[in-house]
Image (tube, helix red, strand yellow):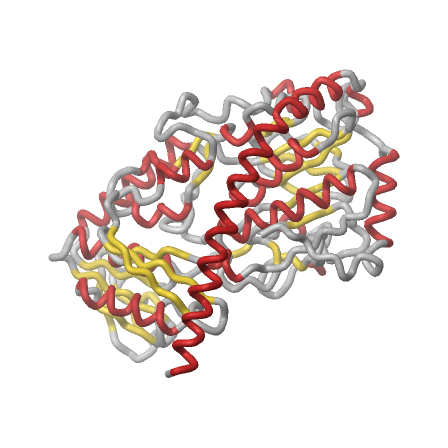
Length: 482
């Protein structure tokens, strides 16, 4: 008991220091952005003086938490006169604020889950960054193939930030590229919950716990059952959070069935058969049984880099763990960095490391910054119904819980919009980002077009050579990004 108390005291001290350091970091980043704005404009002007045939591409695939941040950091960090531009390839019309999706499946506020793109890119002219709304069909060692446009875009450097997906879509992922369809899918999900009397949720991770408790608090007369194959909900976290989540579920009257695997009954389409033999009936079955890393685009280019988990193996520099591809970087949920519970903070930190290394390599220098997971990035907030939540932090030795009351049904949506550089909840372009390329502009990026980059630049060749030969000499250097 004494050692547990000491551990908590130490964690409180570490957490306090972390908070002050975080505030300092945010303040510093804001000041740096303010001071660097004139330099960004000068860099863009310098790029406009370079012939299109000499411009080289840094392609970022995916623009969720990691990719969006990486694209911004690279575009604003490239020096004046650099021949590189950033090309973002993202199929969604809006940024999907996935943390709020379980809530939006039960109550309204569905429009707030879709944040307009472009806010983080203010002040970055189109000469330095191009936005392509499309999906990557496949990769080669120096090109990406667009699925819808059907064209190949050459690259000198590639950042893969494709995240993870859910087989059944909601409540973990929307399953739609455009905002209008996404809003309708959420409304239909809300209606299905409202019209059902027996709701069964399969999966006891964060999405399952949050959706089950929200549904039970909003509709207390309904039967809500949560089935989980493990002996505790939130099993990837510490025992204190597991107990807190269990108490929250039981306090609302959610029936909790632990250590049970569920299969659909062959004789009754509205019932499940549990591993214990028990049969449970439902009007609505909601699958929250986990997510899958979106690494399929590497199946042809680097299949050996895909781990058994589906994540992509990376070096400490976040280069893909394949010496033949030194100019390919991976960050966010799809990267295999040993993080058990990935979240936006981990993604942001990885984006900063990957971006800094890409900029170094684009200058012809060795990518020396290394990613080191930081325990403070693992803090999470778990809602336990519409009005209650718990924030949780652990350094691997001790745990801290902070119980709270939620004043707003839309949770932290307003803060998320503001952090993305957009006024809550003003969406001037509901059909998609104003920054995206026209079809003609996309076609101009293709291999062999009059304005598409082709061949290898001296900077790219130098970067590849140094990246492949410098791993041993930079082994002890650790990135200071936190």
